Image (cartoon, rainbow, N blue to C red):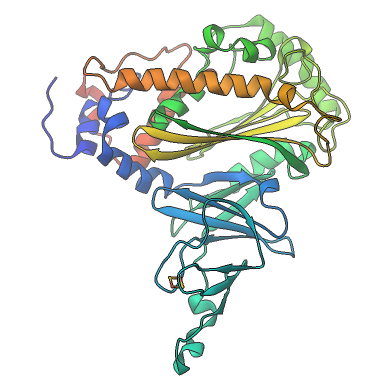
Length: 415
Ligand code: FES
Ligand code: FE
């Protein structure tokens, strides 16, 4: 099929076919990627870090595309988020990563700000300058919300609604108290794949059985969101485990991308009464928060477009996606354990990270192979499974909605 149109977004509009993988340009065109940064990433709530990664007095900087945010928690415990842009001539203030300090000093001409973003000082600016100080030259704020021990920001002037996600995440995570944790380990990856292939891969477990032996020990690959394969074992596990969750005040409510929502929150049963996602079935670290028993299943929090988090009875692992280029995505995994737990005494670091580190690395390899094929002239969109991959269709619809391509011509375009 030949479509001639100068605008790649318009091209997508003519070639997208519901229930199929996306047209090649959706994954490979620079112009689509630039449009995504504007319309998908800068316009939505983005996961940045676990609350614990920005302790009182701490700062964390994260850059995505042209945007960069400084998170800082002042001594009163208040979390601030500001553009990482000096109000003098616009220099980046801090490099990515964690830092400390009561002030932020621009490396160019030493303008100085408080960690709450307030302007503090600038030298040699002349007599009249001091009148223009204060809020006028404070760092520009970025929307920030903190919920269930997770920090989200939005770079848009007007942020989309967050309250429904807040309510759903808090409801499930409160007993685990993920904000009362310590970072046990971090892993950073650069994956040679378009970010959407990583999200698509996360949204289905069609690939789990042949690829994730460690994950499948504790997890059901069937009977989960968007997967209509019947599985009596999963249903039985859910029926048996749910009363134990409720007994210790854990919510069993499942929320899956409600209308206009960007979030999925669900407590899932683990296989064969596994106490956590481990190789042995046993806990790997002290119980989190208020939990008194290890029967908590595993809570999954997915937020589009850039994160998924597993909250087990004894550890949390967050995954953050940062698109770098159309075919390059940075991934950060962070493992958190109960506050004060000591490596080597209360947990073994290698054991703690085995399941999700192995599974993640298997996924990155799958996505790189997938993306290598997508870039070929041999690629054309293939049919998604109506049994196991309907969550990918939902993701595509969400993506298209944000990209703003008109709905009209798509439906029958590629038929
Ligand atoms: Fe920051 Fe000049 S650009 S002090
Ligand atoms: Fe996977």
